Amino acid sequence: MAELKYKTINSLKWSALERIFSQGIQLILMLVLARLLGPKAFGLIGMLAIFIAIGQVFIDSGFSSALIRKNDRTHIDYTTAFYFNVTVAILFYVVLFFSAPLIAKFYHQPELELLSKIIGLSLITNSFCVVPRTILTIAMDFKSQAKVSVLSVVLGGAFALFLAWKGFGVWSLVAQTLTVSMCNALLLNIITKWIPGLFFSKKSFLYLFGFGGKLLISGLLDTIYNNMYQIIIGKKFSAANVGQYTQANQISSIPAMTLTNIIQRVTYPMFSHMQDDEDKLKKNYLLTLKLAALFIFPIMAGIGIIAQPLFFIILGPQWIDASRLIIILSFAYMIYPIHAVNLNILQVKGRSDLFLQLEIMKKLIGVIVILITMNYGIYGMCFGLVFHSYLCLIVNTYYTKKMTKLTLKQQMIELGPVWIITIISCAIAYIGALHISDDALLQVLLMVVIAVVLYIGLIFLLQRNLLKLALSIRK
Image (tube, rainbow, N blue to C red; front, side, top):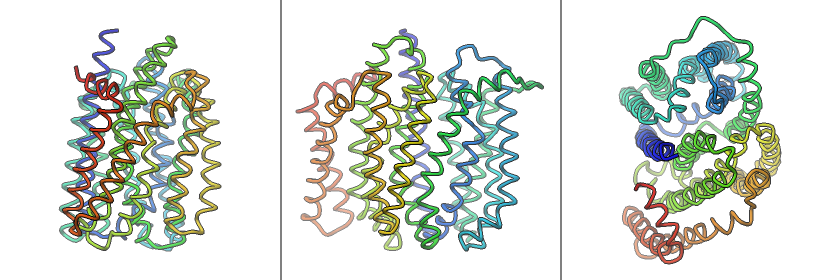
């Protein structure tokens, strides 16, 4: 058990470093490219995001999760998953290639035909990453993954910046996607030194798909729902509007998704080792929830309050609408890691059937919210997204309560104080900074300093045990 604890903490460290560095670099690159390219270029790529995302879900089909969960996995399982991944990727790309004219016609954007054919090639290269990355995850080797991810992002970003500087426009973003994908595939396979066999096991496939199939459907529902906003905005408004929303959504989601990714990649294998020990699983589950809230709540609220002055400084007035959307979306993504921890429990317990039921229910609610709010413009849709996020947390905890005996009320008691402290700290910082100065840069500095001092001070006074717990993790 001591070895598992060491592996978990070490994995958490490297997984965190990988996500923080790679996402941090991506964020910086995104801001520079946004300044150079403008909203329309990002809007065109945003319109294609759903097709690439759906393809990625089909390629994985839940096989990586099934492999991680299976304790007696063999080379046959890995090889079967590999050939499935690559075959599906090729088939999906063929469908995308011949659907390209229809995509361009749907959005009334002729440029999308060639763009979709080229950017879709990333799906094939991505399929070569699934098994090697899964092997490293099972070994809890996040150090190697961190090196691969950061190097790929740097190389892809540098190439995109060069092309953007030379005036290649939206093709800079396409080149970035392809470069990152190819670098990931090459480096992961070099590091793992894994070579597939020349066989395909029907028995292995049936097992992997038996578990992963339900996650596939769940993943498809999640992907389609998450991209519905780009589809509706792209259809009803313009590519520039899609670009504004896409940027706002990406920047709002980066911290939440980064922490969620860290938590899921580390706690899923950790929880899997504890799945037969109910008390230990519940204790670590609650600990993960509390630590996630301690960090993500203030980060997301902080991004919300500094968005407008910071965007004005870095990107200029052409992106001001995106900054306003970030203020709204930050409250939706604030609880995203909490959702993820709850859902992890269902997968660890092998209840992919409940996972699927839950996703169907949440997406149905989400579609209703979208249909109601779409007539109120982009801002109305974003407020609807916030409402949906908090409503779905209630639904999530109803299901996970059956696995952990931890009710919604208990979660609110544990997480509520941190949420309240966050809102108070950021509200005072925001109002105070606006009253003190009209200078955008000074406003950002004041908001950050005031919010950080207030938050840490209030946590120290009111949630000292949680703060001590967080500090003890590194020991």
